[in-house]
Amino acid sequence: MKRQRILVVEDEPDIAEILRYNLERAGFAVEMAGQGDTALEAIRRQPPDLLLLDLMLPGLDGLELTRILRRDAATAQLPVVMLTARGEEIDRIVGLELGADDYIPKPFSPREVVLRVRAVLRRRQAPEAAADVLEIGTLRLDAAAHRLAVRGKEVALTATEFRLLHTLMERAGRIQTRSRLLSDVWGYAEEVDSRTVDTHVRRLRRKLGAEADRIETVIGVGYRLKP
Ligand code: CA
Image 1 (cartoon, rainbow, N blue to C red):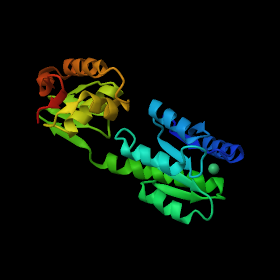
Image 2: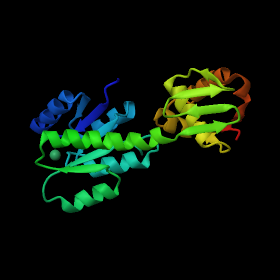
Image 3: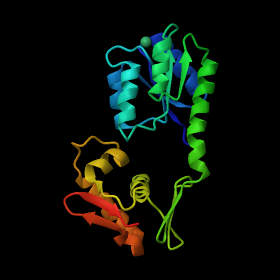
Image 4: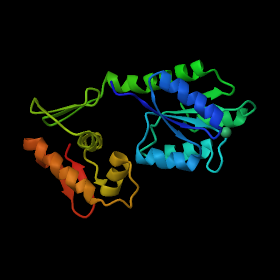
């Protein structure tokens, strides 16, 4: 099984090292950032499976970073566990209101951190695994099993093609602009070359065979999947 990736954002080196050591020992792949803005860059480059985020950081702090992540569709669902020092009661609540999945007060026991991280990851995965099958025409997309069948025949998709089709099927009937798809499927900002989308749609249509026409081109705008 692929190791889950945790991004630890903590400006105090000693605490950061304790977290890294214990999370790695628990089987996670750990990346580190000492500041909010470097963390944001790392997340946009490649979102981790979970963000372990210190509240008080130099520059962009934990709250502001969470706010930015929640506003962006590409990272709105990213699990966030917040680390807070004692006496940050109000900030703590605000943090949860902003959508942090859990918080851990400092000082913490490393064991507790590992348990909380595991619990949040489990919670995040459970509902998806239950029922997330989309069926349109003869397309059947099973999100939990990561499988697509066309007319009952399995079709292999890359991870990006899968996310693209999943997004189009979830929003069937609604036009999706290229920039929206770039942000939601690729997690890119708008300045990225939008031909990436066209290339992937072309490849996806080829794989859909008899259902290729289901993805309509809306000239000058983007794409729409016919419901
Ligand atoms: Ca700090």
